[in-house]
Amino acid sequence: MKELVLINISGKDKPGLTSSLTGILAKYNVNILDIGQAVIHDELSLGILAEVPAESESSPVLRDVLFRAYELGVNMRFSPISEGDYEHWVGLQGRERYIITLLGPKITAHQLSSVSRIITGNRLNIDSIKRLSGRVPLERAGNQTRSCIELSVRGTPGDAGKMRADFVNVTRDLGIDIAFQHDNMYRRNRRMVAFDMDSTLIQAEVIDELAKAAGVGEKVARITKQAMAGELDFRESFTKRLGLLKGLDEHHLEEIAENLPITDGTEHLIKTLRHIGYKTAIISGGFRYFGEFLQKKLSIDYVYANELQILDGKVTGEVVGDVIDGKRKADILRELAIKEGISLEQVIAVGDGANDLPMLGIAGLGIAFHAKPVVKEKAGQSISSLGLDSILYLLGMRDRDTLNIKSG
Image 1 (cartoon, helix red, strand yellow):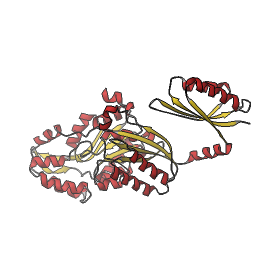
Image 2 (image 1 turned 180 degrees about the horizontal axis):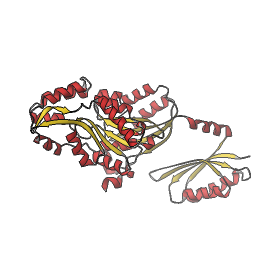
Image 3 (image 1 turned 60 degrees about the horizontal axis):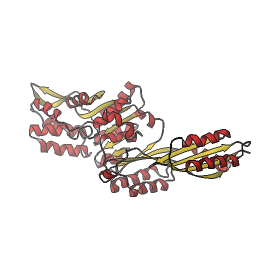
Image 4 (image 1 turned 180 degrees about the vertical axis):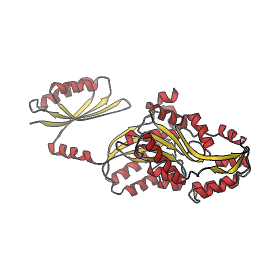
């Protein structure tokens, strides 16, 4: 009769350890049903679920493995597994899987405890935890600027809406970002990222900068704030603000473009996305002149934004063609997905304002970036504690994966 045995090995990691132990199992024609390994600070934890053939018997197998473990200086324990328990475990593999990503300047035990309590309360089981951010030298640990861990969980949430609301509360109370995604084939096969421009790719609202140059800064800033918070219809607010710019000399546009403050992490993010074959796009309710400036600076593939009308060297206070509002942003995103021959599930959309919600809602992954409260509440995911390149963590990328890209 075949036997099922769970072998757990722990101790100081060293080269050749796995090879040596599995070599012994191979001599007895042992079948590996499952295996998992983790190393933290050079301390190894290795688990092997082994099926020992009836003709081999477990006693000599385990004796030889135990002796080799002693020679290697590691600890080992064995647990027999019944066929019933094994079949029950196999039956769980069809359950839904999710990825929960924790991002912040640092991850504390209190934050992780709060998140894991919510996970347990929703009858989800944590299968694995891994660190995506780089290791931090001890002398810099007190000034750590970014940290990320990824949890793979399995099961069906008792109340997905309440669970998301609980995560939002932890985010607000403990200063950490939490992303909750289905772990499906689309998450591992995204192909395009579309960005809002103002207050997303750049840390400014261009129309406010134009208004300052026109001497109407305070008036326009008030309207902008109301629009981004969803208190005013975007199209109406845009028309009001644009009208206040009438008569502005066009030479101000170049000066403002040259001094646009690029959001932290933007260049690293775009460079990495381009390196791994992603398409990128700007879909903005701002102005094409500035979108094209960023396109050239950052090597972005597509730009869609409003065409600011200029006659005789002066801004007229109108745009050429239709205004790009929230609905039009979503339509453009659909058109781009068709053009690229991909599903909307393979698209990531990033924005900060209420007019970004339609495109965030239809994208496979919609991210509210340093967004207004109303946008955070309605968007699928939210990042407020780190730079724009932290989006790479939501793709499952580790810091070490992009190290050469960043410095190259």
